[in-house]
Image 1: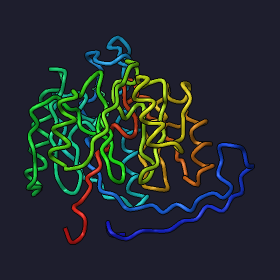
Image 2: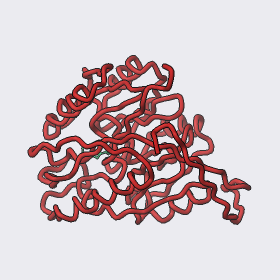
Image 3: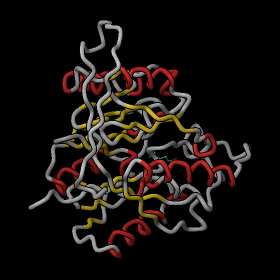
Image 4: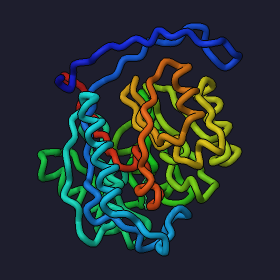
Length: 299
Ligand code: ARG
């Protein structure tokens, strides 16, 4: 399957109707994607820069690689292209490729990490894009942690701040991409990156955990996305929002059973994976997957 082809799959199951469920389950169309990933060859938890990381807890390095391989294989089975960046030995968090850049319309916004422990990853990802022929590449001035804090909807960029990326980086991204940026304030340290608290499912359809956001940001989300899937704290705490969606298949942690049910009711096909080792660094499927969005055809 090429990147521009699509496959159509229809889900025909009937659902009991409750207030939050639409009468007919929507037909979903997956679209082939282009991803960049980084094998967790050097993955470990040797420092703590988020509340999930505990350097005294052992990490099973072999299991981390096996779980990551499962994720990569699944992307490929679903028809997506996966490219790989070489892991750096001194960068145990480099497996979280979503933090490597933000790519929209073939334009690459590089990253600048808040924490010194991850600083070397920024130039490595930028170099990968330059070496692979991307011409519109911007080396950022302000701290932004890539798709950890920038999520792309049909027409906008949703941008997280509060723990990692700065509000200044939101303005920088708006200027570079020429897309309206919606700044959202994260307030719970467990949900330190936007992609731990909110996920784009398809186009302008999102799901999120409301309590992860400030009151004002919650009001913005309600105004912009009245039909969003709202996720419980229990599901959010097992990284249920750290998902990769191709418009139909939604890869998520297997423990996120409540969200899986909510997604099925909307016509998506949730696929659960066990990524326990990668969770020890504070990440899951989405953190390990950076989407490369091509320039629109004819542009
Ligand atoms: N240990 C990494 C950090 O704290 C985890 C990053 C997870 N990535 C993500 N896209 N949320 O920076």
